[in-house]
Amino acid sequence: MNWLELVDSYIDQKRKMGYKLISEARYLQEFAAFAQRQEASQLSVSMALSWANMAISGSDIAISRRFNILRPFSKYLVNCNLDAVILPTHYVGPTHRRLPPYIYSDDEIIELMNAASNLVPTNGLRPITMRTLIGLLTSTGIRPGEAIRLKTEDINLSNGVIRIVDSKGWNSRVVPMSNSTTSEMNGYIQQKNREKPLFQSQQFFEFDYPHSFNIRAADYAFGLLRNQLGLKNKHNHQQPRLYDFRHTFVCKRMISWYQSGINIDSHIAQLSRYLGHKKVSDTYWYLTAIPELMSCAASKFKIDNDRQEKFYD
Image 1 (cartoon, rainbow, N blue to C red):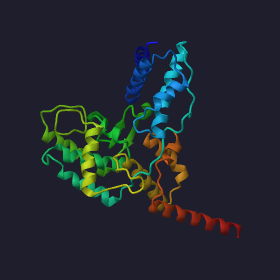
Image 2 (image 1 turned 180 degrees about the horizontal axis):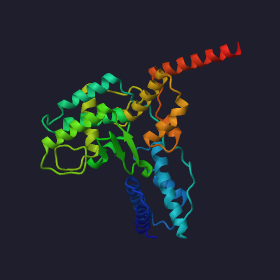
Image 3 (image 1 turned 45 degrees about the vertical axis):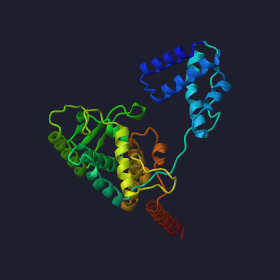
Image 4 (image 1 turned 135 degrees about the horizontal axis):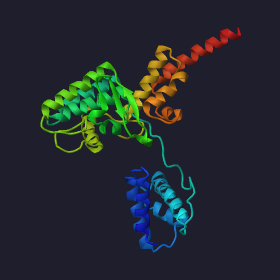
């Protein structure tokens, strides 16, 4: 078998179907090189496990993820009538785990946005880009990747909405903005036009260099802000992330609903759709037992319990 050609053919077909296969393609090419060195004549469970165990970290999660990446490829080989078996699911273990996110307080969000003013060059786009990005993530709860991929044409300031195109799972949706967020986004556009009037780009968020703004640049800049304020996640020993603003948004929305007496069960599906989730359970994944939320839930439980006792009395 020419494993390199098989993997290239598989990747090509998947991409024609709309799959991006960015990190998966790299891993599959690594596997193809491994199988070629082994002069393997078929894809077996033992060979897949041998390659999966070569994960650099050596963790169960990493090994399981590598093994799981090969499963769709094994189906492809079987459909091509080649000598292979369909790799079993959950053979090694879970491929994901939930690390406790960092839930930002209102004061921390303000401090992060203010600290963005100190980013260099202080007279360029980098400070206002990070400030506006943090504000948008905080107020809308959209994914950092969704925000960074926004194009200018996706922002409708007249109606105060954002159009998210081809996001996770190829979902597209319209996300409304508050009046204050719309105003800040408008201010960012005006500032960008003043700073770089000769540089034409379709991308909404930009830095000062004429290259596409990407998640790595955003993560690096946010890391500078995070370290400046000394933010650390004591629950999982991981650094707070841009993605944690999404978790923060969901928790604060639930707290607001509790405090307003809104029936959460009747609104959670709307929140799920707003966030771009296919299942309500995906939305519950973002909830974290922070003291403020648990206090609201406890108060709600006490009120409901008191009502039940009066009913039975």
